[in-house]
Image (cartoon, rainbow, N blue to C red; front, side, top):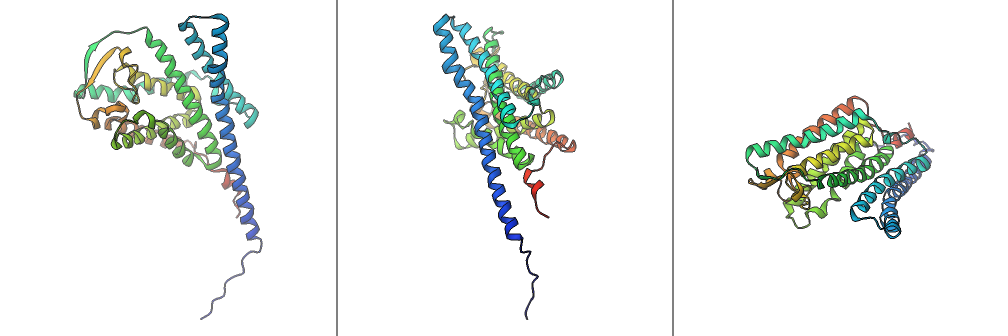
Length: 312
């Protein structure tokens, strides 16, 4: 039995070839944008740290405390200006995500505290964490708070403002969400370099959820400072409780509470701290699902740019 098939459209190979070339151009354009943005943000850090600060130290010899405040302030201003310049000159648009909006800022900070303070309070109530002593509030906490704000600003500029938005324009919101969250988690591998395979796996799950959480906040607000406030408040709340912050022990001595673990690692979070506690992972999962559902209902998810060019 013979079958007759309709003749294919003679223009189809040219269309396929044209779409392929267009896709390659989009990928290279995306990678170029990411490289330029990364250079604008982190190049600003290098210029301040390796150029401006040593110059000021040589010329004026300020004390270490003054120089430290100067360094942090300049890094904060420089990375913000660097990102603005990238958006203004390369993307040729207004950097609306840099606008200071008090209501989202305050809501972002308050929700960041609540999201982590509630499960930590439960862990203390269950006896998984125990207070050894109350040290009182140290004046050094302000300096640490400043560092946490700068660190959160750098991470949010890099992963949410730059990486997420560039990927979102080319691949759509859903793929951009997943990609930036995984890359954000991989950046934290060094924090569990001495841990077991279980420590690494749990950290990757937890920090990936963190990346999804802060991306969800960014999608809903499209504002850097609301996301930074949520992120920095989350980190500072962990620090105040006297347990490890993302596997970092350096600042525990400055916390008002001296705390210790009294429960299993799956509940306390082990070496990485409460962020890898099963209770915190469950809390983050619920928050991510709720925020992304709200974002989806508001029509905040964008389609990939390639869909605009699909042939009928």
